[in-house]
Image (cartoon, rainbow, N blue to C red; front, top):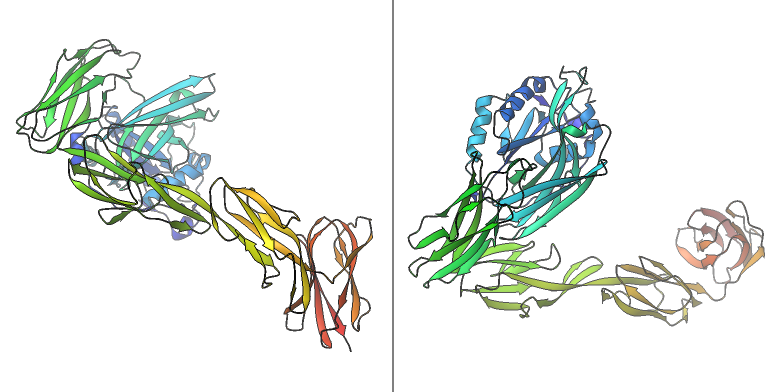
Length: 626
């Protein structure tokens, strides 16, 4: 095993990993097909990798390819760190390595949660496989691809949630891997020339895409991958996998080599204490072009319960894949409240087996609670949640829901508007068979940050520093436009705005539409300061000249050149660095200018004057002698 040194670790990209709480997967034994996934980490410069990788490859080749697959991530260590498969896609390789905290190779993860450590052995890998093979998956992934104009491939993953996920927010990964890369001579220092299941590209990155999965619903992720001449196109294979917050890979998928199964709907709800009946459709949505076998179906209820039966009313064989079967589940009045999983097994004539599951809920319902914006807080039975939360609740039970409003994030605020059932901010609901989702709806508000410059002058900005509904119009105004303050007369000059849709101009009042945070600064000048343009010649550089006369009493001239039109500030400071006067603050065109500084109200001494633009700052010294 080769370790990654601290020095080498510092060279990796920083990846922010969102950690959440972990839950067990014991209830997933009642769901459908699973294709296990090994993510392994290696390098062409790693000696132990050369000895262990063939063991991994031999193990994978000895297993049913519809039950297990793999993808390899290459590292830039140990030295010299020139693995060409790492160098081809550094970001995605580093992202997955950082996600698991891999700091030694060879190493891997079996379904995300079992560490596959060296030295690899057939017995150890088979043991890991046996630990997972009977744990069926809560999701089905149907992966298809289509090639367009021979230069790209469109990969589409259709993800069906078969059963209840306590934490329904999961991450979906789409990847292209190259099944076999052969070099005529070893590209690294460990002597390997053949590499298998090499990750080439992940979409959108190695961080994947977050989706929310509810029982019986679909999510579709698709991406067109542009062909790269570096790849051997005949060896490129798409991969999709779904991972939850505990890092457990719930399922993975390659392009099907036989047939797939789907059920509709994913679950049904019936009352407890009464006779119940629910119908489901079973179909084969995708079959490989070479697959033409009839498929025979059986159904089983788990847990086996007296009074719950599942039967195919109109036969249990599909020979034409456009057809579907009707599965009817029945329950008697004596069946206790609970979640009953109906597992349907399809077996082809040549012995290929796939499973799909549906839920039959007696006296219970799946209910999800969320907000219409991600990462907003809400309460369920006085417990605060931030992300979508799913519950299994008894029919006719009462549950309390509460929206938290307002929720403020710097210049953005969310204000509650309504629940999806029109309930109050805080409400008590009665669970029924028909409603399975409650959404707390919020509206966005943006803050218009506003202030006057120079700071401290007593002016009022109407509608400034307030939150405004997104997409609404608001009028901002400043008053008074002229005032006396600290023995000086100030007058409004112009607004300086930042943020999409902000205002820049000389009107003291303006109207804008708010779609994001906005800053507005009301610029005031002193009325007794004049500034004149000496001539219209455009100077080739900025310049602040020495004042004249100097020393002076009590008036002196200050000249300066402006190369590019823009905002200009001319400020006076005392010997302690305190600003005592602002001679000018506003926009000037390019040119040569002069202004006067009248020091009648100031004592003799040393003073400084400063010219400041977006591209130039200069300070000079002057002396007042009275």
